[in-house]
Length: 508
Image: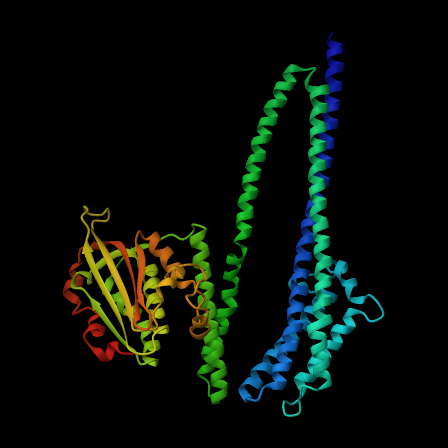
């Protein structure tokens, strides 16, 4: 009996070992196939992005070449020629990456072998057509605008290629690559079905030939399967968390963009101090302002992504409210002064106190509202009103008294139609696209301000009349702290008085 049991145990052990080996082999093969597919699809996505970009660049080259040939104003000529040269350089660099590889873009030569042959098929390969197209574009770029006409042979050839067969060819390459990507996805789907079928058959085999003869072994196997299922659920949750992290990739990469951008802004700021001609100073100023605008946009995107991800935490500190108002006005005064606007503050005596809330985020909201007021007001005045009202509650945990702080920013600008007020406070939303082009902006400022105010337990709103102006306001609960002895003895007066009572200091 013992010998029979031993033989049965050995036989079952052998079968179980075979099952485990099969599972290991299938799992390993599946992992290899999956990793290979992910790698291939990642490279293919990069190549598709480049070819789609090439399609757009060829059309941009044709457009700017025609605009360059037809322009009469010297500034327009220089702008179109600069854009034409930029498009030519980008298209040539992308083409080299698509045909020779580019380690800087994580496109080694072996990754482009699949798509490279599209450029060298036939008697007149597409690679030669692209080089001919770029050569024509170079000659148009080098041709003086005084002798360049719409009948120029290079320009005519550029128009024909840039609006017809060059974009069409890139479109065909993109379609072929996408078809291959879809085939890979179908392969993965079939692989999933095959794995599921194999797993099911293997489980049946184990149930019939292993677990059935040995009841205790079955119980142990069930317990192991329950543990495996729990591990699988945990692995799935981890994979979902990893997917969520991957979805925030662009927001995270924005941090890496700011480092070189800060260098550009710093160097252009230093360059502005050097002896330059008026034209050179104008170029440097434009580059500096564009860099600052881009940095502000990146910061807005980072704030928005942190808020969406729930990673933005408020940092409550004690600070003098009038000092914060003075800082905000100091930042916005130069812009208001350039437009000849009067900036007036009205700070209620109850608001000239020390409060506890997130100083940085409150400053961010006030500067955003003041900045919008300056941006959309051509003449007149801008007023900032601050007051604090006590709330019918007991003292706060930090020993202060609960107050409701109300801040209003009014202007005499263009105003907002009633039917378009619903577009405010939404991500990347502008009331009017024409205003976007004229005044600039990303449409994130008010959206971020609303989310910050919501996080601080308050609310924000707007009242506006077209052609008469707007009033943006927000209310937040704050904790008013008792004044320290040194504040009452050493402070001769609040800084905000110079803005509220002295018109020259408050007028920009």
